[in-house]
Amino acid sequence: MTYQRALCVLFIGVMLVLGSAARAAEETSKENADAIAQPRAAIEELMEQGGIPGFSAAVLMGGEIVWSEGFGFAHLEQGTRVDTQTRFRIGSVSKVVTAAAVGKLWQEGKLDLDAPVRQYVRAFPEKQWEFTTRQLTGHLAGIRHYSIREGLFENTERFPSVTSALKVFKSDPLIHEPGTKYVYSSYGFNLVSVVVEKAAGEPFLDYMDRQIFVPLRMTRTVADRTERIIEGRTGFYFRNRKGEIRNTNFADNSYKWAGGGFLSNTEDLARFGAMHFEPGFLEAETLELLFTSQQLTDGAETGVGIAWRIGRDDAGRLIYHHGGSSNGGRAFLLLYPEEQVVVALAANLSRANYGLSFAQKIAGYFLTPGPSDSGASPSE
Image (cartoon, rainbow, N blue to C red; front, side, top):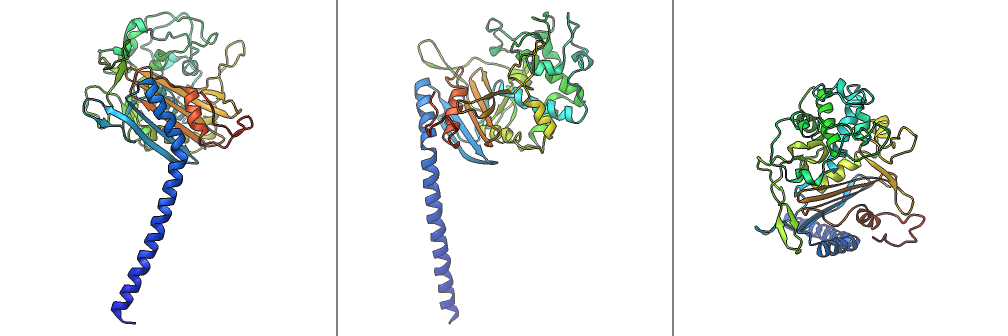
């Protein structure tokens, strides 16, 4: 065989292999397109009904992101579309991110969850009762939540540290005896951030970057610092009483980093969720801690562990979850630990009209039908 003919045969062989690979990729792409047609249609319908400008979804199964997609617009004025890297305000999903820091410090022996909080935070004044970090993370400590009348969703004051942000509520009395009631409190997580800072021996945001975001490859997760240029940060919108879309008023979230001040994309959130399926970054005992319901003093379970909400879907499958609302944002993170499925959703609209039931609906397209599913997709 001549040299030229050998080259020709080799070229034809390579082209046949490439052609076969291309056909396989095309078939795989078609299969993927068919698989996500229903969840994509569900999101598009949600956006149309709720007037949501921009939306993002990511689904992770068995450690791999199987679907990630952006919808609509990140910036309406510029016509910038949402993509998989767009950063959204995740609101109270920040609490479960902070819970990872609490768990890490606890497993390292640096944080005693049952010690009085003032053992770590001397800047917080004495109250009529003592309470613990465990109670703070389970909304049992008696710290009040913020109210709409305070207008803090539109806060304009920049707080230089997590300790300085305590001034917003630290003078208020506890609203109930710790452990006797469950009362949701974002301010409680303000105090958690100071506990983390003191236990870690470094500023809260530095610790989150160095010990949580970097090791978990959460490269799109940052504090929503309004004074900084943050690449990929979406615009923030609301709809007025006439249904007209408007830019939200300015909001500085430095008063609540731990409870609602982070930006992220849905892929980061999905990978973060998957970290909780197996011991590794967090030890088995720590994972059990996070996902064990806390109890009231009368023994009643609250359904909340260390920030995470714990429940079952309509088919009886175990779920962990948390949602978040913020000025110009709505996010949701849902975990199916036994099936190792994560759904992460985010929108750039205040009070966007979705929550746990919609996240379960999206998950349903990817899950094996449960005992009561009868093969049907879950409904809203």
